[in-house]
Amino acid sequence: MIFLTEALKRQHRKLPRLIIIQRIILITIGALLMATGLEIFLIPNHVIDGGITGISIMLSHVTGIKLGIFLFLLNLPFVFLGYKQFGKTFAISTVYGIIMLSIFATYFHPIPPFTEDILLATIFGGIFLGIGVGIVIRNGGALDGTEILSIVISKKVPFSVGEIVMFINLFILGSAGFVYTWDRAMYSILAYVIAAKAIDIVITGMEETKSVWIISDEAKEMGDAINSRLGRGVTYLHGEGAFTGEDKKVIFCVITRLEESKLTTIVEEIDPSSFLAMANIAEVRGGRFKKRDIH
Image 1 (cartoon, helix red, strand yellow):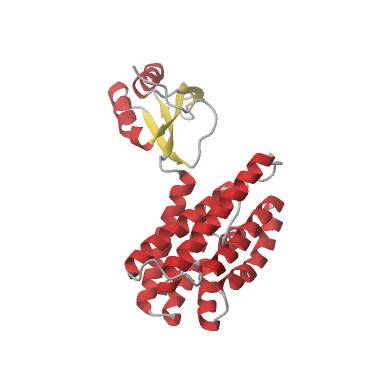
Image 2 (tube, rainbow, N blue to C red):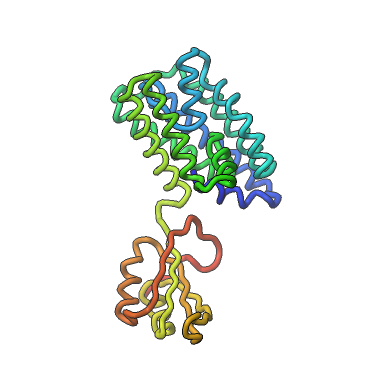
């Protein structure tokens, strides 16, 4: 959910028609998967999601009004807020996603649940939900207004978007104990955690990538070793030590999570005293990241 801000950064340029069609298809699939997680797994077993979706589920349960109506109406104010903050493309993508979610949820409501095992329903409901939300966020939209509200609030308070989302959702998920039972509230929290992890996997990808920064007096030898033994290209950057004033050569490269151990071994073999820093990367595009074959 925190990755929503990253998806919004790509909304300011005009999109080619092919990309627009691709986004429409993917947002539709995302809404379909989320509706499946809700209506086929979670709701029939009295397990809810967080955010506006969770509020909509509880209101639908109490009033008997169709879930799709609440999903659409309660999210509309946040779509307007998103338009003011992030622009027209985001607002259109979000409106379309919410409309499709409302339609699918209404259509799926009469379908019997796939399982009445509460644990299985929680796990698979959370997975479907998370994958669906992740696909929509990755394509520049949102299916729940909570993230939009949290981004706006975070600019005015000393808390991160993730902390605000967590606080709101814990309050909403805890309310499920009053509407249903307390064990259902705990299952709802479990479904939320599973969904959050699924969202992270969809947005960051199954094969996690890492950026690597190395400062070493043996930079040339180390760069050659990374190139030949890992098959990864490296870039040399020129730096200057703030304390010593000495010129430093900095190695920059991008690797996968599975290559982390081998890279660390290379660094320790060539220069154990070197400075090494690694960070997770959500997305890699362009350049020469594709791995070169090692013979």
